[in-house]
Length: 268
Image 1 (cartoon, rainbow, N blue to C red):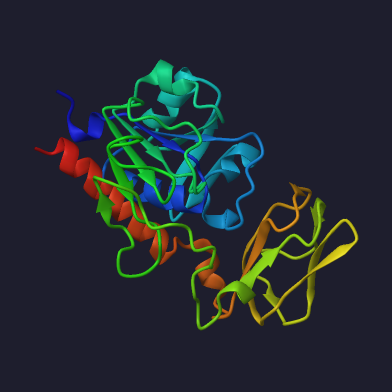
Image 2: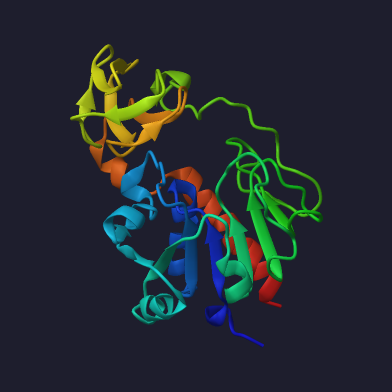
């Protein structure tokens, strides 16, 4: 029987919410964490997303470092150094090789893109698109509100509302979306102050315009190819630049829920 700190954990996805989960598990002394990502991740809150390690080789969030690895040997070296490993593996081919004790689908894709209850002894999936008992062992509710972070062991999470979370009275207005298909360009950086009506960037020749005053809490990497309607930025009306580089309350709640699911399954 493995001790808790010997459990191998694979997290599918390394965006904002997945990163919050990984940080919470790492602080709880789970140090054998591998995160799987695509070759060109499109995270908006890049300063708190370990998927940036795909582009930059390494990424630190709140003092915890994740490092891009190419194989299991590099992964083990990163683990020995007390860091989180990130591997480009969009199809999850490493699942069969690594045989994890815990598999977490944290892509928040709103649908099941291939996760199976047989992927690991404990399979946890976040948000709508999964049925606990069929696709996975546990579903975590991701909808903001009273049930955020609730563990579901039979059935599904609440359907996707399509409405961004409310911050200081603003919801849809704070989200920047691609006005066209093309390549996103900008001279602005995460943490910059913007005003309503200000051009934040462009997709081709189409302007991306801020709808409210605030701080650019998130912005996808310049040069990214995007489709019309894709979320490419996030304006925080609270105007506190320091919030751009810390994990959100939602990501912390989801991290706590996943931690609860693991402890409930293994700490008996």
